[in-house]
Amino acid sequence: GEMSIARVDKILHNKGDLPTARLRESLKGTMALNAGVFRTQELLDEGCQKVNSMYQQFEDVVVDDKSPVWNSNLVETLELQNLLTCAIQTIESARPRTESRGAHARDD
Image (tube, rainbow, N blue to C red; front, side, top):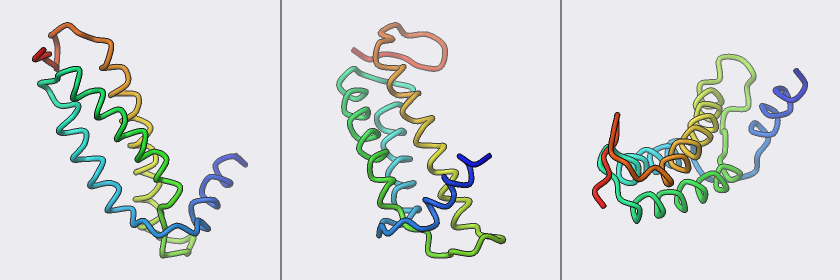
């Protein structure tokens, strides 16, 4: 509805200077290093700080292509916004889990 249109409009008219790809690569590296299969509390805590910082940096992401039709830059930016939300949920929920089972193992 209207909230979705406002979300897209805000992203399209953002005045930031951070390319979507740069923030996406940073998120990818942080999640691989700090929320991988083998984890420690120190890595998870560091990763939480980094991911939360990236979530704030999203306000500075710029979409160069302002076209509403076939805009792959906009699609990538919307995907990044969703990835950031998932990353925060993943890493924040991993912090209190100190057991090793399933798809992760604690090294501490």
